[in-house]
Each structure stands twice: as structure tokens, then as C-alpha cells.
Length: 292
Image (cartoon, rainbow, N blue to C red; front, side, top):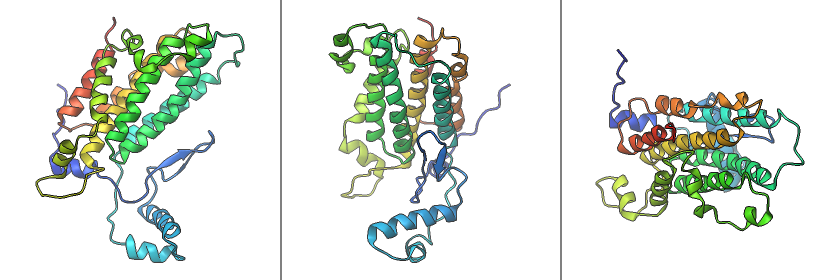
């Protein structure tokens, strides 16, 4: 019998998906490797880096002064976002390795080149999606995710095209049907993301709580939960599109190991989370796994 996961209370969710006021990010410098504040960076290091940025922006000459005055009372924050961060690095590494597994092509149809360019550009957008999701933005994450669905639909459309006009004189938002047989849930996903991308003052007000206030809640741990769920789905959709067109290549096994990785990471990340938004996004994975 499978072990049931304890449902987390709101207090536990707030702690697990907390947004740290300290800098908490990492970047890949020109493919040379990950640098910055990785998951194992100490609390003191995060304070020091954040203090350095504040000192630079506010004109202070002493980083230690800024750290002591503004950051000394900030509690240590343990990042629980490792499933998402690890998934991004795993996908990034695998796609890089795949593209380096064969000689550069010079005789492929223009559509194949357009496909590759769209998918390579998508990797930068995925990095941005992970960043804004982890920082607790919702509208911004929805905009990036929706744009990625459009990029994937474009990539699926252009693969076999041979004329410049077929590649350049198109509108990706009108090409969503090209994803239907790859991921049947892509249309519904696009609609949900479009709804999220529109600013709804009342919806944001509800997230603030019961107290009256004139400020808009730009970021929150609840937003973070929703946005992170969509990030996992987009990783899965990215793989499905790539698999459809490169699945017969001799070296595709390099990328094939990614199959199902987003859903597995999703379940680890949201273990114990009971939220209708998370359940809805997870149902999209199920649809994407069915054969048409």
C-alpha cells in the first residue's frame, strides 16, 4: 500500500514556499557552469551579497554597516525549491549535450533551423520562468509561460517548412493547433495561462487577506505555488515537442532520459500540498501522456 503524504497546513505551506528577502539566484555564465547563490549557499553569504547590492544602490561605503543595520534581523531561510532548480539544470545540460552530439548542419531545410532557434531561445525563457516563479510573481510567470506555449507551437509548425515566407510570415498565437496531437491539453493550458496573465485587482486583493489596504500584493507564497506548478508543466511540454521531432535521431537517448522527469519533480515539490490550482495543472500532465 502506498504511503499517504500528510497534507500540509497553511502555516507549513507558508514556511515551505516562503520568499526570502535576501538574494537567492544562480546563473550559467556562457555555458561555463552555475555560479552565484546556489541552494547550498550559507545564510551569511546571502546576507553579504544582498548587503553589497544595497550598499551599491544606496551609496553606502560599508557593506558590513548595511548588513548589520538592515539585514541582521532577517531569519535564515532554507530554500525548498531544489526540485525546480535541479530540473532546470538537468534539462539545460541534456539539451546542450544533445546538440553537441552531431556535426553542425548546413543542408537542412530552413524550417529545421527555425525550429532549433525557437527551442534554443525557449531555454532562456525557461530560466526566466523559473526565476520569477521562485520569487513569487504570478502574472509575470503566466506571461512567460504563455509565450513559451506559442514558441513551442511555432516550432512544431515550422519543422518541415522550406520557404522563408512559411517561417517568417506567421503569427505563433495562431498556430496552437500544431500542438494538439503532441499535447492534447496544450489548448486548455494556453487558455488558463491567458486568464492568469490578465491583471485582476479583486483576485490579488483576496490574496492579501482580511485587512483593508491600498497596496497591491505583487508577490506572495501563494502566487509562488501556482507559478511553480506551471513551470513544471512547461518543462514537460518542451520535452514532448522536442521528442516529436528529434525522437528518431541516433543520439536522442541523451534527451530521452528527461521523459517524465518534470512530473516526478512536480510530485516531489508539491508533496502534501492541497490546492485546486496545483491539481488542475497536474491534470494537464495526465492528458499530455495519452496517445492520440
